[in-house]
Image (cartoon, rainbow, N blue to C red; front, side, top):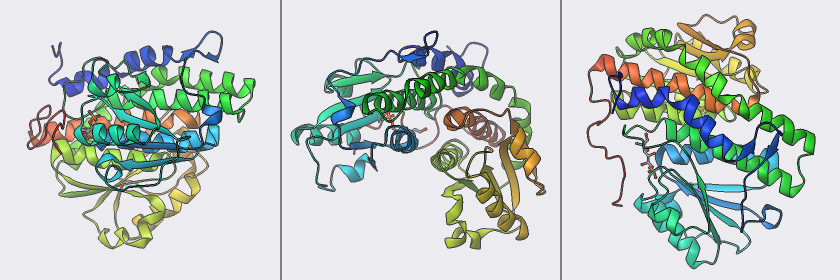
Length: 364
Ligand code: M6R
């Protein structure tokens, strides 16, 4: 049931602190500050690379995971949308770990990619939400997300739970590969344990996100920009907006702006910039300047330090608390989901059952 919420999507957005906490507890021991996940039969020390694939929002979760595995565990990750992966005939090594991300565990292209990798003799692992699903059954190792049933077609809590699992696994891999120390492990586990608290604070931005959505519901096009792990989140933000509000949105790596999309910027173009005050911040600010100089309307999603450091005039500035870098894509997902949600509500679309879409895509 929707409880006292208007839509399942709204309910599922609000469930995030709880289900993320539940999911993380499956992988991490908060009180000891250590990893608790058992990843048998996988030995990350012996894995030469991860071959990952997924579709839609699950693919964006995988893209963010790539940044974490590469940075924390020094483990290279190839990631593709499953509909390309399965036909690409890429050379695969038996020492690579095949990794699939799926809420339903039934998506046709992802399942076909899984079976292809199995045929090639790779160890198969899946981050899935539905424990009884086909992908779960056919995997050597299952990494469950404990998001509970997700009813809204637009994925919200499954996404942040997928990210929570992938971040935890990157720490596990880093530990097994000796790329992080015991002290790093304790720090990272502590940082991840803080996600539910920050997500609760992010949910308090609801009224502001609703007010921004009122403006957004007036436009035909929007651009999302981000760097680092905020880049895949920009892709996810654009997908969410398209799916449920039917506004045409594009996500771009901020650095790509001047390689084409800047031509689109004028006074009628809202540009949503995801920019926590991290090591990429200054670069993103210079991209924002380019947008501002062309009259683009900036909606900046940042933190206290970012808001203090940027003197640019924006249409709206959304301020989250300062938080550790690793958790920003998970927490920043919350205002981005609310933005899509309220924009769709203002547009009067069918939020939980958007036109032309199905919750689980079991045909190719
Ligand atoms: O069940 P899956 O996670 O495999 O589904 C993948 C995509 O179909 C799904 O994430 C889709 O993009 C959502 N509607 C996004 O909100």
